[in-house]
Every structure is written in structure tokens, then in C-alpha cells.
Length: 445
Image 1 (cartoon, one colour):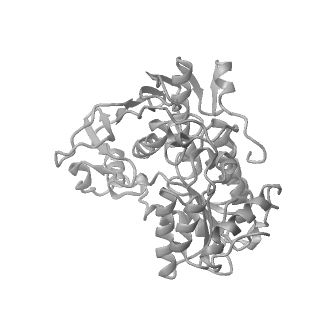
Image 2 (spheres, helix red, strand yellow):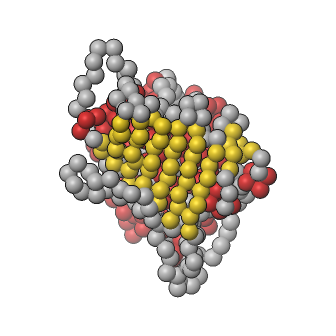
Image 3 (spheres, helix red, strand yellow):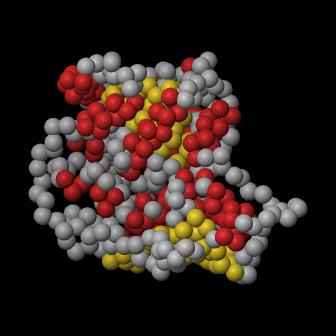
């Protein structure tokens, strides 16, 4: 197997990474590895110190790498491999991780390795489903950034792969693992605002694209074909990446599939509705009028739930509620109950709630809810014991489906009916066809 080693001289770095990529493009998906050689749920490997690989190490992926390298230096784990389609990301990350971490462009080489117990995936959204399924099929435990998936069929495949291969999957909606989210969940679960009838999420609008960038050849440090992966092929344009992929429906889905995956994740946790899905989804909004980006600039989505009956709304832009210190927050949600309201600001790592929930003292006999020890710690526990993680793949796909259905309703301009038990749109053949999209071979489910 051609691969570049962290031990090589830095001047050889890019040349060798390119050679590994060239070899990888002619290979099929790697052979599935027997789960017995890996640390599996409830069965740690012979070495109790887990070995990790990182797939996608720009942006949020760089943050994950820094965190795991810190843990490695404390003797808690090993970081053995780094993978990214951008050589500049790889070169920076290699310096952070150290010489023991091999570098790759093609994630399939990482999944071949029998010494890798788990992978942390922080690639663009359109890669999440494919890479998670492939990793699970190779017996790897998975931490994957939100949103879990870009299509409904991807989500089904992720759930099936996780269950079949008995791996722990944690999705990076880390707001659930914050102390304030726990406090809010416990407060609501004990009836302190009464029965929740409505949750109104707010977020600022998506940016518009000024346009003006022509298609061009990709830069020499970027493997454009691997960046596209499962997406239809198209010429390179700098307006597609990095980061700005979020403003394309096929690769990012806009604010609702980015921050919505945080805010609505916390909402379903607080309302204890992970197993519930809406019966109807109705979206309105404004599409961009120029440039390449095509996600909704402004958008409102109304999700109606039954048994129990409540309504969830996504408002972009919505009406923000000032924090208790008087500052404004760009996103959050108001929880309306029969006996009062509760505000939760944020929804990601910066989640905050009101003082009344934070300082509430539970009386004897109060209902308890699960409290995460930390988002990664919760995942590690799932790897070692088989316990379900706080943002497990079933829960994360449920949240991602909210985002996906909102965008589909916006695109089609009509209300959609959803069957939660079947995980399908009903009564609308055109919308049903949009539950999946073709994926380019070999980067497909």
C-alpha cells in the first residue's frame, strides 16, 4: 500500500502524498476487516489505549485533531493517521499530530488499516453518509460532524450500517453534552414550564453570493475529484470550497442544515422527542437571485408533531431573545409551555439557558435525564461498553431529516407529509424521488 509517512522529511511530503493519491484512484473499496481484530462495542482491543484516525482536518477537523493530540500527550489514546484532500491541510496537521501519524489523501487507505479502532470524520457534509457507512462496514467506530446526512436514504444506510456492525457512532451536535442543555432538559422534563406546545428556533439569514468567480483549474495542492466525491462532477470554482460549500443545497444545505442541526438537536433532546418525527413540514423562503450559491437566504419552516401534539419552527431570520447579560445571540430557541417559557441560546458548544433552569434544585423523586460526561467522553464510553451515545446515529438522522425535509419543502414550494414509522415522504411522488440522489462511483453507498 502506498502511503506517506509522518517520519519523512518535510520536503518529500507533497510529492509522496500525490503518489499515494495516484495509486488510490485505481483501487476499489478496501477489503472489509474482521471486527475481531478491532476494539468493538463492549470489547476493547488487546491494547486498551484506542487508536484514532482523522478524516478531514481543515476547520472543525483541525479542532478535533488538536483535542485528540492533547489526549495522546496525556497518554489517553493514539493518533495514527490523518486524511484530507488538501495537501496544505495535511502538512499543517502533520506538524500538529507528530511523526507517528501517517498522512493520506484517500480515506479508503485509512479504513484498510487493522490498527485503527475509530475515525473522526470532519469532511464537508456531502461525504458524511458515505464515509460513515464505509467506516462502519470496516468495523471502525465513528465520530462524524453534523449534519449526519444530506439525504433521507443516506440516513437509513448509516443507521443500518451502525446496527449491523455494532459500532459506536457519535454525531457532532455537541450542544447536548453541555451542562446548560442538561439543566434545561431536566427542568422541562420535570414540568417546570408545563407541557411544551411549541418551540421557536431563530437564526440569522444565509449570505448571498455576489458571484463573479469563473471556473478554473483546481490548485495543485487540492484533489478536486476526491473533494467532490459522491457529488456530480463539475469544474472547479473557488466559490465551492472551503467552508462556503454550506451555501449549496447539494453539499451543505444552508443555515438550516448547519446550525439547524445544532439548535434542533438540543430541542429534540430537551423535549425528549428523539423517536418522534413531524407529520407535516411546510417551508417558505427566498432563494438567491445571482451567483452560484442556491440555499435559502431567508426561510421559515413549520413542523407539526402529533401524539404528543407540539409545533417546532425554524425562523431564518427569527426574533432573537436577549441573553440575561443583555447581549444578543444569533441563534437559539424559545420553549413555550402551558405554565411558562424557557430560552436556550446557541445549541452547539456555546449552549446557554436561563438562570431559573441552571439553578433549579431537583426535589426528591424528581425525574432524571441522561447527563453526558462530555461529547467525546460519551463516545469513548459507547466504544468501550456498547452504551448508546447521546447523539447516536438514530437521533442524529432524525434531526438531519428535519433539515432535509425543510429544504425539500422550500424547493418544491409545498407542504410535505411524513411517515415517521416508515421514514418516508407520503403522497408526493416528486418529493419521494428527492429522498435520495445519485452518487458518483466509486464514492457511493
